[in-house]
Length: 174
Image (cartoon, rainbow, N blue to C red; front, top):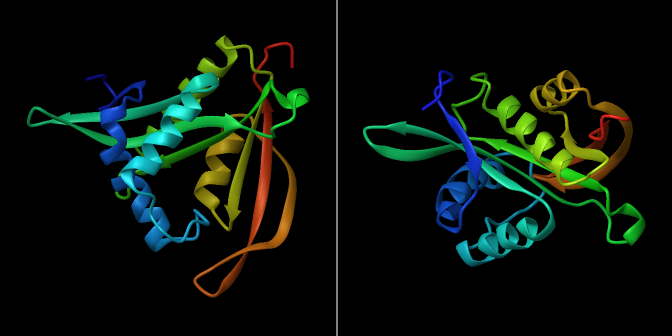
């Protein structure tokens, strides 16, 4: 284990259970995800496999008492389907409830952006359900800049939510 208390590695098929533990909290308890139902293991495995074809899916693991436990994950996917967008990726990061402010999200995003750069991607887009001060702060500290907000485009728990979008260059040429 690294000095920071967790390691970052590529996601494996067998990580799906841990990923669902993390994601399920956000689906059931928050408006961070606009999904209403937690995906099944088969659905999440399909998402993971599909994203790995061209993009990346990584996890942060903590080892205690000899068992590896996921404390976060991040992935990139297709921003838009048209071929002109092929060098732009949409990024997502989730940290296990109770594991925030340990640097997990930052480490995952830094690793994800580095990996996307090595795959030739030019831009990263992050969509954030608002309000979400922690996610906005994380992305802006990593160089993401706000580019727009869609007002009241999602509803969950009988409340309308805005969706904000941030972007940053991946390609060092900007």
